[in-house]
Length: 401
Image (cartoon, rainbow, N blue to C red; front, side, top):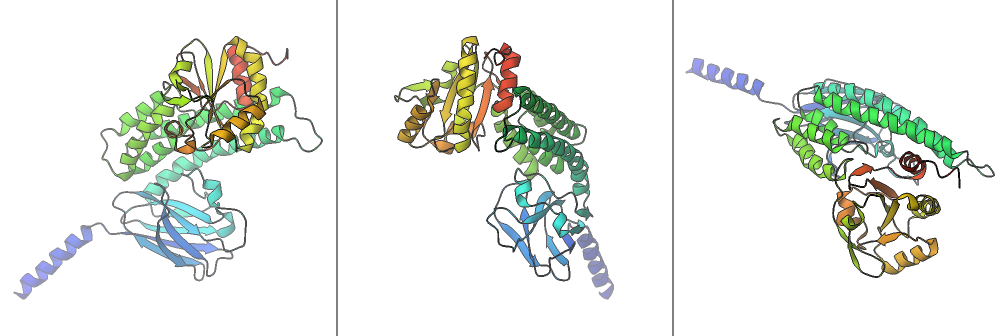
């Protein structure tokens, strides 16, 4: 009987040893962090829920949790200093799954702030994370992708300086802005190609599904590339992130380069109803320009729209402005004040509009260009990008202006 009891206990111990355990994260942070609060949250699928919290003591903290399939987590270090800015907490994002024993170390001031990772899918490269194979794969991707991000940021900083030369200084020649925009486009296409290639070269996994979620959000991605990514995961085991990717990818196809225009019915300034498809397929390039009466940057762009419309409308370039207003009188007043002589439409539902959701319009101004057949050409048709595109399509009329 005693022998049987010992054997049974031994068998239970063996079974228990093979059951998946949770993960553990141990952190060591240097800098002014004593007594600072740290929160554990999901960073992959947006949620405000806090999974756990602790306090840093002697520069150390620890968390434990369970994840049957890899999840992307955020370690959020609460900013205690007074500030009028939002999202100033510093973060380390990482992948974890059951049985991972993760060590994290970093200098506090080297960590990125939440606002710097607002678009999602990033982390603080200065942090050292070990003990997670999923996170090692993610960092292999992220460090390469981050190099493209930094190159684009450098060009964009130059573009901002071009647009805002400073008080008393004149803006440089139009060619400078267009050159910077073209360089950004080249790097962005390389970044998208890298992202899709990184995924397609490997066996599908939850980590790769998370990377694919970022890839389908790239403004230069083509609908055919999204199809290839979806096919890559079609036969894969459907964990949470893979299922989430496949769902989001199907929706993203509607707003990707190469997709046919979505058909919505909006009203003009008189209340008459119009289908968007009524403006497409007539041998002209058509710009859908999303704006609102209350949007300062939108209204600052309108003089440029007036300029290009006057120059290129006779060549076949059409503008359809779609307002994100929910107040008709304010919308009509802004149209009169800005002397917008082209087509004006709205459903007066602002960002609750089905059109805005379909085309992922989360900020304005936003400009989408459709070709004469009704296919989306680019999601970025503003400022110097617009000038460069118009010159490529119709020739340079600015020089004669």
